[in-house]
Length: 367
Image 1 (cartoon, rainbow, N blue to C red):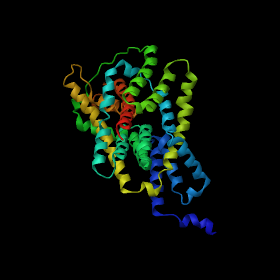
Image 2: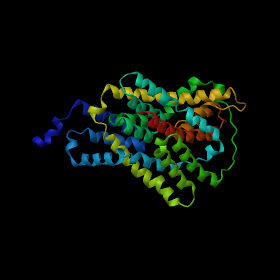
Image 3: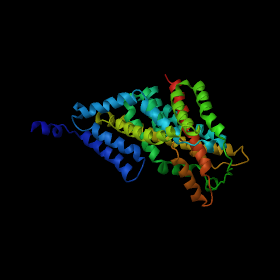
Image 4: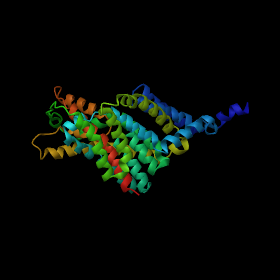
């Protein structure tokens, strides 16, 4: 009888708070459908991590094995990149290559927040870099950098990154409206239905890998796995591999990644002031990334004859394709006949590349 009551007697307030947080994540996944593929396993993993005495059980040993095999080795984030690469069509970006500029401009929040975090004195430069990368709106990149620089912060950084990715439709519109006028949001952009040759689509991932690898060698794994996934999609002779990457690989690794990250969210590690600060600064990074893309588009409009709808700049974050859809919805609120989706998709795809290169630069420069 004492053994049966041991778990109950070991319950602490922290455990109950974490159960509530896990419940919120599951609620957002099930009811609100915010990133359900990730928030659901993260929430359930958090429940497992906070059951009293669970760390003495064989079940938790399995989670520790998954952590060591998939997170410490960086295997899970890299496999996710293969799946993401196989899902992305770079065609819209190749038709409009100048959109690559927004994939860079919309990473401003990463470096701004990294500086702010370091200036607080609560985090060293490596931890600050890991916090700043939340602004990339790219969960795998955030996990990859956090594992390198701040192992103890993987839980809050991952939750913040995936939560803000799922909240793109809520976070980005107010920032955009605050920085643009109605007339700017009504700007129309011409789109040509030119086709991109298969040869260009095959060469593109190879060239990007080479350039990114030479400029920022630490980004080779991140960029290389993403571009490999895209190459098996575009080459035309590995359709089975491409479909497997998009479906079976993506689904399996997402389940394992989510529940493993959730299992790091123990009350003793998660319930502290620094966690709240990390989540708050992650929001700052996300807002400033959005603002950086919008303001850069407005700057270009001062020198360009063909005006750019500033909302396209906001799509330069890595939350693909959600951000592009949000931009189209906002454009149609300003003018129901306006169509900027393909331009926003181009910038959004560029954001995938930009966030990875930003992560690689941080890994190369921060010591």
